[in-house]
Image 1: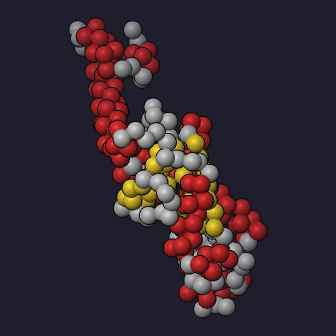
Image 2 (image 1 turned 90 degrees about the vertical axis):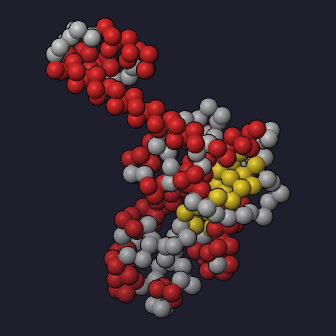
Image 3 (image 1 turned 60 degrees about the vertical axis):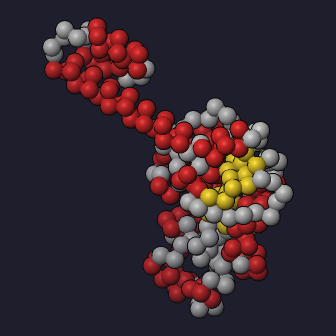
Length: 250
């Protein structure tokens, strides 16, 4: 067998298949064969570790399932800190057999990784979004707005238990509030990805309406570019007027 053919065969083999192939090539002394098996072995080790990590972050979901709860929603929000745009929350109920290696806190994932995860979650899970616009954020404050966005999302799914990132919601459901939950729970991580990609898309759309501000780059956070645009172009209808850098420019 050519080494290129061997590499192709090793690209997606399982551990038992790898072991069988390695035994079959045990007398082959070609350097390329040795390298091909080393690369495949590293891939299998990485995949095994990813599966272990994933299962560890299913701990809270599995605890709920052991108590008889089936519709477990992970809940997270994005957009507390920006000076412009809405706060967006997502609630996600994953299927029992869900697996997506590398799914974690959306801020720790690359844009490409998030988009792949977003598409997968949308295809297989139940997903709902809650959105609170800047005017309402100014009226009730960002903490209450974040909570309301989460509760909007939860109300659309009818879960029987919740895993919530760092917040307790005013709903009559069993719930676990997890600090840094998007890194500790797969369901919250899924909600984090959905919420972030949804909000980023909204801010990219706003960037076309207000091109001076660069919303497609910073999603409304108070970057130097954003503050300079506030000074030169003023406050837009999507700015949060109770946030000090905006309030100071009114």
